Length: 272
Image (spheres, one colour):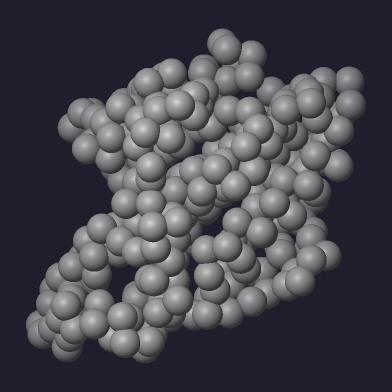
């Protein structure tokens, strides 16, 4: 069964539930956490195809939109990280209820993996295993790089740059929101990115023995710096490199067969 639904929370969250028939249903369910802003839109098809592949193998899956994103209610421009962590908690509860599962695993892409890390610290033991695809480890650095790409895009498409990165970051620090590829980024979110409470405590994380899979996606098939950092923090997680286009940065559809097969092979081989 594939079912579109609204999770009756405040605000309401939109989700897509993939629930196999009881006779083939596994006792492990997967919660999919999407990336940020325009990356979510570009990656949607790949995450749907991955969810359907897990579903075909008997795993219950829930894709959902964080508040202010996609078809969920809420204001993207004013949302705070704790609110998104609350959304994950609500979605996880719904998935466990529908799937009647013993274990919940997470599939998270890019910024979604950063949220999964934060959630795991706040709700230890709730997530049994993680599958992270090109995880964002440092959100403030990620935003700075994304703003640089935004300005380069302005130059390529319009022939001129109407703003500068330092000025945009100064706006955020001065309690003013900025436009980020058509999405309003609020100052509260940026301050959360800088808050010590959301920074990775390396000593604590090395004691937090996460299990699962780290997936690097690159054009040359080599492991990214972000994935190397994640692998150093969580040595018990397996790593795999997939050579393909960066599908979360593209407007056109990308063939994600290699990525999906890598994750499926890990899931079915390890029986997770």
